[in-house]
Each structure stands twice: as structure tokens, then as C-alpha cells.
Amino acid sequence: MRQDIAASSSSTPCEDLSHCLPGFTLTHTVHLVSGLNLGVVSTAADVLEGEQIVVDRWAVTRFGDVLEQRIVFGEVSEREAVRLREQLAAVDGVLRAKIEHHFVRAR
Image 1 (spheres, rainbow, N blue to C red):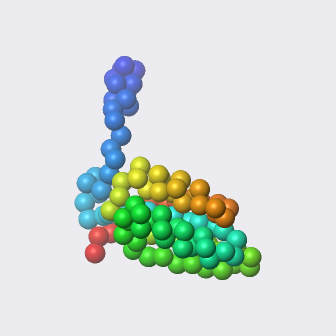
Image 2: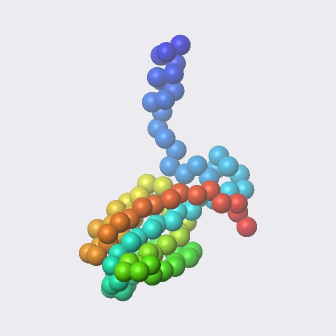
Image 3: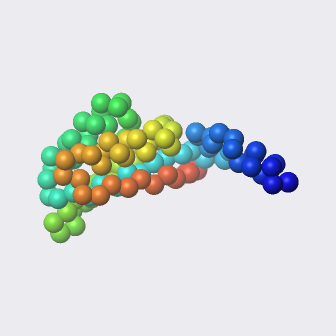
């Protein structure tokens, strides 16, 4: 029995789980926190444009001495979204970056 569990858990993980939940799509939200430097916003836009990412929503909010960007996009795999977060985290001036993956009901 233990061999069966090990064999089944060694299978390759699915890149896009949308087919597992009919009626739902996978979207990603990247949160970037930086100082009050609008250059970080334009550099992030350049990164996403260079990767040809279609942004669904983008909000920039000021909290005291920091800016938080919430960038929502879909139509990429989870692995690609993580790679994008890493690229955005490397932008000069970014203090913190995280990503959330969400299944949302298709419209």
C-alpha cells in the first residue's frame, strides 16, 4: 500500500487546474510594496508589457510613506505567474512582493 501512495504522489503536477473546476478560471494577484516612488509603477508596467501580460485590474494605493500595487491578471500558468512575481520583486525600489492565486467563477 505504501508503494501505491508513493507512486501516485510522484506524478507530475498539473500546470493549470482550471479544467478540474469547470466554470472557474485561474487568476493571479501580485502585491508590490515600495516607497513613494512612481518610477516603480512605470518599471513594473514595462516588465509586464515586455512579457506581453494582459492586466485585468491594476490599483495603486498610498499608505503613509509606501505605495501598494495590486496587479490582477489571468491567462498565464501558475509557474509563469510566480516567475513574473520574481521579476517584479527584483525591480529597484520594491520592498516586498507576494502573489495570490485565485479560482474565480467565469463570467
